[in-house]
Amino acid sequence: MAECPCGSGKPYAACCQPLHLGHPPATAEALMRSRYTAYVLNLEDYLLQTWHPQTRPATLNLPDSPPTKWLGLAVKSHATDGDDSAVVEFIARYKVGGKAHRLHEISRFRRIDGRWLYLDGEHPR
Image 1 (cartoon, helix red, strand yellow):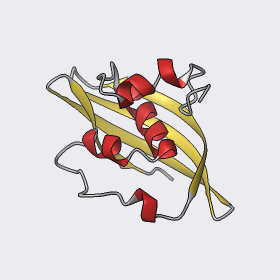
Image 2 (cartoon, one colour):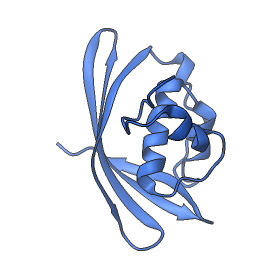
Image 3 (cartoon, rainbow, N blue to C red):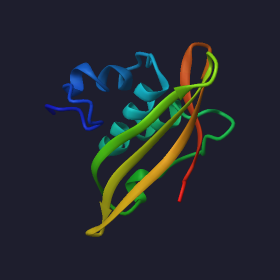
Image 4 (cartoon, one colour):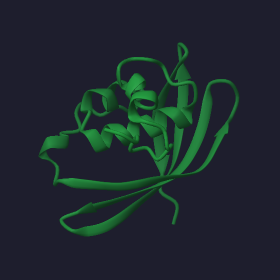
């Protein structure tokens, strides 16, 4: 894979792949980008490992979901709220069954023991 699916413009090997292999992300935005790429690549284990334990589902069942073609990610904003919490607003575009969709989310992240984790998100209108 040449360019990373997260839209950073960097090669996958120099962007999200190290995070997928266990390196901790430096920022909540880096974690969010790596999670988007994990959805593109169907890396369910990584998604669950980077989900806050208070809100983590037992499984995602990605292979059982309708096939999703991820089209792109746009990060709108990233802000920290103290040392261990952050918010990232993004729009992810995708297609399911040939129909285009967009996911607009304001995601909350928490850092536990030096590792950023996805907590939850809101979908603004």
